[in-house]
Image (cartoon, rainbow, N blue to C red; front, side, top):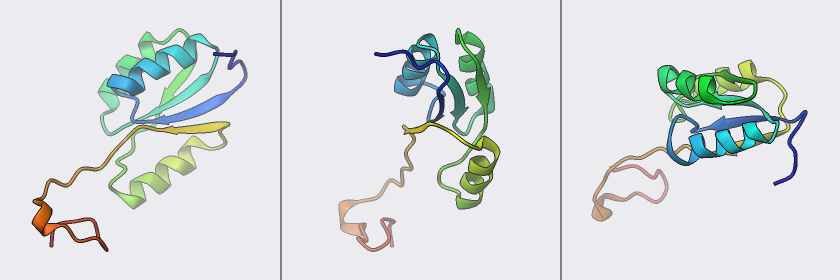
Length: 103
């Protein structure tokens, strides 16, 4: 991986797993990170463990207003890494192609 010095990335889904691991790697390469997920306490622990600069902006990707507020708060970035997901458990027979939710 090349140096990320001077680059600012917004990572959505950074509180654990792949997001946390990627945040550690990118921070070590010099990136300034904005870490987002639903749980501020988990994000803060990740941010504090990083070698570089990071700030926490909570967001719930299932809530359009939350996403809009977070995007405004984050401001200008060089890139976005989206690792979050929304999950609605449903039976295959209840699948609605037009809406993606159980009907």
